[in-house]
Image (cartoon, rainbow, N blue to C red; front, side):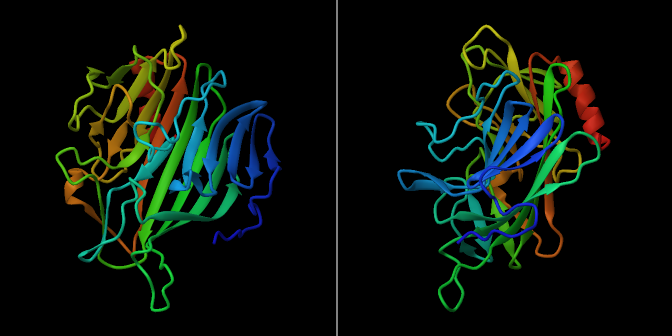
Length: 313
């Protein structure tokens, strides 16, 4: 059962924290970031399902374009376990015991116990969410599900700057048991980690610091950011979502799993994903990403923003 803790949260429907530009609205099922009257993104805290299947929480959907159109997909027909902007892994082990599959949402759940609005320096708005991972395959002596991982995720939205909006996501993972491992798909693709499911039009193009990229079946080593641009809503307007990986991420720069249709775009962690990686129960593993929602940023502009991001700006 979800617990509602904290002075700032309590997830009360209609409770709002306003600023002159950006503001937060706390609802029973999540938190809506707005800029003026425009919706920016929604962080899902309550469990959501498709006819009782694929139960998920702790992800972003919808993510909106600068003109208020929805850029992400939830429960897509081709992969109903995909969900907006999400971070998940196929493999979860404690010792030699396999504990569910967070990617395909099998024997796995996320309890969002607390969300707080943070004080920001400047005009940005942030929330931090405390999330506990659980599984019916890991029980205590009384048959209750024990915590697997304590996740603290911070989402920060910055005011629109000319033709782009910036969203920072920091994911902190602390194992609740020793000898805990997470990993990607157990094949040569090895996908897992930070994964936006973005609506794609036929003319969508992929660009990295190395230039234009053609999506392939296997991971691509293309640098520290990836931009997906085009008429993402099948209109004449050029829009884009750039995914920036932080230099402090373990294994940086991560490779990319890219798909030109009917799939997510994945900044792979760990790599190679099929081998998995240990999650410490002493020091958290921290993953940081920045999204740029834009109307036509150039590669040089994205690289400059990434350089600032690398310096903590």
